[in-house]
Structures are given as C-alpha cells and as structure tokens.
Image (tube, rainbow, N blue to C red; front, side, top):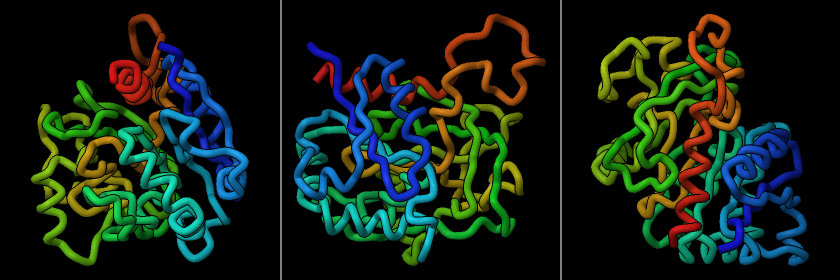
Length: 269
C-alpha cells in the first residue's frame, strides 16, 4: 500500500504546520500543507487525503476566543466534507489551537452522528497567563482512541493561554469518561501508573486547572483526537527539557508514538 496522505491545514495564523508535516513524514506518511481556503473553494478536497491535522498556532489572532473563528470557518465552510471524512473512517487530530478549533466547531468531544454541535470549550488558564512548560500526560488504556493505542504516559510541552477544558453540562463529563473519550489527563510524574483521577491537580502539574485534569479528548469513534500539549514538539529526545541530565542513547521522542499509531491505522485498514 502507498504511504498515507496527510492534509496539514494552514492559513490565518496557524504556525506549527511545518513541524506537524515533519513528524507525519517521520512516521511513514506523506504530508501536504493545504491552505484552508483551497479546500473551501474546491481547489483541493479532503477526499484526496487519509488523515487530517489541524496544527497549533494563533488562528485569526485568537480574536473572539482561541479557535473560535477557525472553528466557524471549518464548521460552516467545510461542514459536509469534514463529516464525510470522519464517517469514512479517516483520522483527524487537532493540536493546541487545533484542539480548540475542533472543540469549538463541535467535532470534539462530538457524537456518533458527527452533528458538529459544540458541547465543551477551552477557557482561560486559571493562572491568568500564557503557560509554556513541560507536563506529563497519562492515557486511558481502555479508550477507543486510535491515536493513543499502547501509550501509557508521555512528557510533552504545553504552550497556551486558553487550555482549561470546561463544559456547561457536568453530566457530560461522566458520559465521556464512561465511553473512554477523556483520553489524556495531566498527572504527577512522580505518581505510580495509573493515577489519573477527577480531582484537579495543583498548579503547575495541571498547567491550566482543566476540569478533571483533561488534556485531550477523542470522539466516540476514536478517530478524532485533540489535545492541548504539543506531541510533535517531542519527536526527539534531544528536545526534552532534561535531556542533558539523562543517561542513555538519544533518539526518537515519546511524541512520535501518536503519529505512528495513526499512520499504522491507515496501513492496516
């Protein structure tokens, strides 16, 4: 089978597309930077691709809230294409600003009908400031998420000012937890696995005080995944915050597992 084709969206302030393209190619795919207007105009269609990625950045300058305007651009300009893409069994990932976009367009946490109804949001960090630090994530081993299969924990950097996952219906949190959609949570790196729980960790273990320490979620199918931290920024151990104090050989970083999972999913289906 030929290499999976990845559409890495760009334009309007997205600024992490090059490193997102790079990690997918390192994982065995071919990636193409595609300006969102080219898809809206019909010059390019999502059906030409196997995976879609919405990278980090500051789309539309974060005006009206991080990810709001880009989310509307996708929700109303590409509604049918996005729905057909997911229903065709093709994976989607949103990283940082991309996660905010997917949440505010209603694709995450989503529903089985892919109705694009918003049910959650990413609010201002409780610290009241932009957080640029490393965090430790723990992943739900029972989640249907195809992006996180076989991953237990991961160190990743966070770079955001609006990363606090919230919802106006707390009952939905229980539903999402039961269905395995609360895929990634912030944890204390000194704790034993598993340790993810609903009690919010103290700052800065939870850099934004997200409800239930939520760092990332998936949709019911497990195909659509979004997270606030940047796994593409840990594609090499040389990028780790403590690499100079660690013994052993350096090589591929922990973040690569997420992208390899998606590529392998396409190759095996």
